Structure formats: C-alpha cells, structure tokens
Image 1 (tube, rainbow, N blue to C red):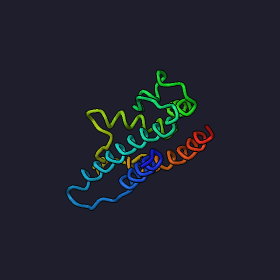
Image 2 (cartoon, rainbow, N blue to C red; image 1 turned 60 degrees about the vertical axis):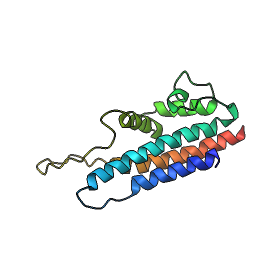
Image 3 (cartoon, one colour; image 1 turned 45 degrees about the vertical axis):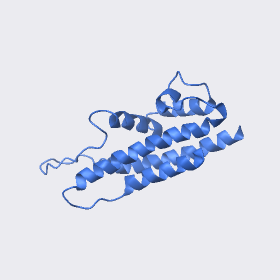
Amino acid sequence: MSDQSRTNQLLYQAELLATSTTDDDEHATARRMAQEEGALALFELALTSLLREVTEHARLSQHDWRYLLSDEGPAMAELQRLRDLAHEPDSWLSWLVGQLDKLHSSDGAAKRRAANPSMIAVGEQASLGEQLAAQLNAAKREVAALRETSQEW
C-alpha cells in the first residue's frame, strides 16, 4: 500500500469511528468514549502517514510528528506549511495537537457528559465525535492541497 493510500485509509477509518452511533445501553458512554479516543488515535496515525507521504522525496530517517512539526525538524516547505498551520489556533492541526496531548495524558481526551439535570446549559458544545468529524474534513482538504504542492516537486 502506498503512503497516500494508507493516509486515505486512516482518515476514512477515523471518520467512521468518529461518526458511528452507539447503542443506548449501560455501556453506551464507555463505547462512545472508546470510539472517540480510537478515532483520535487513528487521526494521529494518519498525520504520521501524511508526513511520510509529503516528505518521501527527502528520505528522512524519522517520521515522528512531534519532531517533524517542531522548530528542530527538517527545513522543508511542506513541513513549514504544517508548522505554521499548527500555530494557527483555529486550524485542524492545532486542534489535533491539543487533543493528542490530552489523549496521551493520564486524563485522556474523551469525557463523560455532565448528567446534572439541575444545570442550565449555557451553550451547546459539540461532542468530541462531532469536533473530530469537522476536523477530519478540514484535514482532508489540507491533505489534497499538500499533495498537489508535493507533486509539483
């Protein structure tokens, strides 16, 4: 399988997990949280695959996303574009990096929903699954643009 095919596969699988529904039983919350964190983990794998894909011409020995997106990473136009994107607070990559930090922490990224009926909801915040679906769509648009730039080389 090519790097491009693997990136596509991982993004698709993450989207499937993020948008799947759970049965309404005693395990529904745990199942939802597992699906959300599983989708985030797949999104992380997709990011690594994307980095392999857009840097394949450089024959890098390391493809860890934290290193490649850091200031110490290789000086490449595609990586700089992604570094800049990671620093934009409203970008999919900035959101993903923040969620991956949570995922790798002892608290995890998925949260139980508050079940206090006496609380008044001030604003309906999108669930992690809904946020994931939106960020995956934004990532897919960026992947297409990165591939186009990478093919020009």
